[in-house]
Length: 399
Image (cartoon, rainbow, N blue to C red; front, side, top):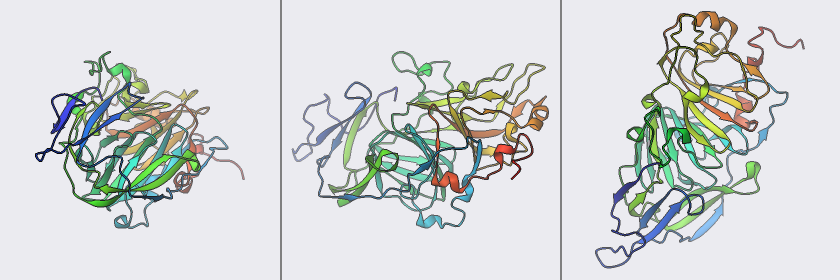
């Protein structure tokens, strides 16, 4: 995070005594990145943050993957994944199904109306996109009220839980690194530049810490291990509720950002995908496409030109509107397209002529571009339409 915040009760100087009304000490915890050399926050607890009373293994949701061989562009129908499930029996953590993954990022999907357990991802930051529904995300730093179009950015090892107030559709982007605003949007001191498509005012931090009482509380922890994807799970039982924070300050905390607050960058001719970027992590970027005026050169072709992803796989979640470049392909709301590196992709042929003269695209989508090839998770295999690869030619293999 590029700017400092303080919430609740903190002492005047860091690393000094902070006492309760009865004279006993609060416990100071530094939550920091990159070995004390990057963003951090100081968090003040009523209880000892290291205390444990029990631990047991947690069997993670299926994390196995299958290579995309033969190399094919794919259309994944995410809305089919939970069509027969009761959302009141599925939670936002243990109910996730893996769609696509590599060593840098994992993309999962879940439909839920059930409170999740307390959860901490110790392998990397999470950026969870709310496709539909509303919820309160409770964290050690305070609560976030979230709804459709929100990105919820949760720094690594932030203890939190999802409490839906309606049925949620969540698209979870789990990094093996940290997730932040693109460096080119920031000054050398970390402030958003005037040229950036969003700024600090658009980020919604937690309102402040909320102390919760409790004893022998379970926290589900995803961490590095020897299981599929190099992951493992543990349930820690802690003697006091982890939401025991009376105050915190610093530059590292969870926040929400709604894609409706992203100001699109447009031009006379078609702009390349980096103008749509919203976040970055090691080995991947996150972009969003929002309703916008399109190219205004008199001979402009508003849909993308064909492009060969030499260095990346492109994954697009279609959220709302009719995505102009995909008209005629069968893709609609809740679809994900995978365009792998090594395959030249672009608009459906009929979409090119159909877009000429357009002044505005009313489409919403979330894109993840990775720099290592993605493999299919069990959910990706389960919802593959099996036909998208042949949509540009109009015919498939003779078998």
